[in-house]
Length: 190
Image 1 (cartoon, rainbow, N blue to C red):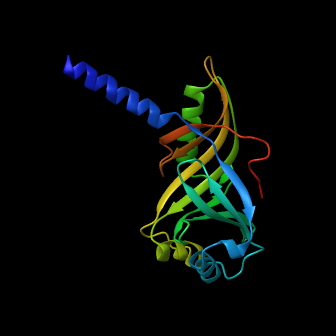
Image 2 (cartoon, one colour):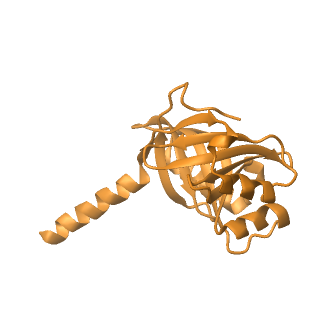
């Protein structure tokens, strides 16, 4: 009997891990509200960048500063902890910029999970040590960097008709997905 309860608990934990809600709030802030470490890292890493817009962002569990800028004709979003440590770099990409095997895996997930779906936003995400992330930008070197893909999409099936956020590993395998709950005034785009 104890084994059955353990299995039910594990199953429920897996479901919660794969289907959570994202209640993100984002507001524009001035650069003097951002920790100096974040501004210094950005200045050293993105030497040829466009204008930087700073945001404070929270999803109820995590608080970050986010820098949004244009670099080499691509939109970049860099998350920093409140004490100025870089958390990740996300770069907006198109489906055609994905490795074909990764795209195939992501599309297979959408096709098998939803009767209708459409991708609204796709980003490549880099995480790792600050020095390694700096090398991604200024030297196009990806050693010791973890690559993931973050996708916002509309998905409809018998049970759901929602806006979702999904995170995939470097092979396009689903790591996590959650429903996005947005209020029109809570989020700002580029």
